[in-house]
Amino acid sequence: MKILVTGGAGFIGGNYVLTMVKKHPEDEYVVLDALTYAGNLETLKDVAGEPNFRFVKGDIRDRELIDGLFAEEQFDVVINFAAETHVDRSVEDPGIFVTTNIIGMQNLMDACRKYNTGRFHQVSTDEVYGDLPLDRPDLLFREDTPIHTSSPYSASKAGADLLALAYHRTFGLPVTISRCSNNYGPYHFPEKLIPLMISRALADESLPVYGNGANVRDWLYVTDHCNAIDMIIRRGRVGEVYNIGGHNEKTNLEVVKTILKALDKPESLIHFVKDRPGHDLRYAMDPTKIETELGWKPEYTFDTGIQKTIEWYLNNREWWENIISGDYQNYYERMYRDRQ
Ligand code: NAD
Ligand code: TYD
Image (tube, rainbow, N blue to C red; front, side, top):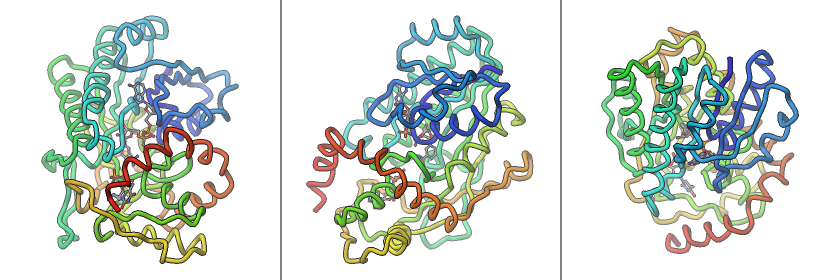
């Protein structure tokens, strides 16, 4: 199979490519990535010389470029990881979330229609379901939970999901969608909770916890997500949505304290700051469908995954220290200045 992976220089797409190029030498992987602030070619250096890997720099919002690439390559499968992904940035500047996450994705689906691509897989998120109350641990997101979004980020992802299902129903486009809970692991950009806290704790800097730190996220180690997507593109049913999650609910404060303990740093580094506007309270996934239908099972618990992640950040300082400079430093100042 020839597989187009958009956003393959980002966190999850990068882990997907690093794993699958080696796992499936019989398949060809073409990565298309605009290399925004979140994309990093360094992430892909381990597969750069593989015969079944090719990188193309380009923007999914560029219809002409997309058309040319599809004409040239004749893909069997497209997996769309490319997106603007940070909720806080979407609060600051929603526009690019709409153009990349919805219009860029529509360009890809139009190309799939024109070139008869066998599968378009949209990588979506649990955030399209909105949030759950903190005092109802019995409630979980299922695939038929109504879409109900809180942030411009989640609204743009929900828009893309609805468009994908509409293209399936109206044009018969062979679409699948996966909605995963919060990922963590290697190559995670240090603006997101876990890598931000690891990198700041290592520098003995204060750890900005929003509100009272009681918000809950359902954490999944990134390669477990990648394996689930690999199963869906091979054996998933067209027109279906699959939830992915490993029942690893933690409050943000629990996550931060776990990191501090593992790094032998004091809890006095924790600094409660002004809450995120519209902050979702709790996410929790019911992954029964993918478990029973495709036999997917996560390999990592939160305990094993977080240890592996912390070790990776300790052993790969160069990767993230290069990022924490220049523009990103300015971003940190801008985002956190008013939260003190
Ligand atoms: P990321 O921000 O780390 O990477 C996004 C990648 O997309 C980057 O390499 C960036 O350069 C590229 N990109 C952005 N705009 C582009 C454009 N216009 N054209 C081409 N490339 C572009 O994101 P991530 O955390 O790896 O997330 C990947 C996907 O998974 C996203 O669709 C996200 O919504 C979804 N998701 C993420 C999580 C999570 O916890 N991180 C959970 C569930 C779903
Ligand atoms: P994040 O990693 O941005 O993922 P998402 O908002 O998509 O779930 O944030 C995870 C949780 O951590 C979320 O509840 C917000 C919180 N958070 C903080 O408390 N402090 C921070 O500096 C960041 C970035 C996030």
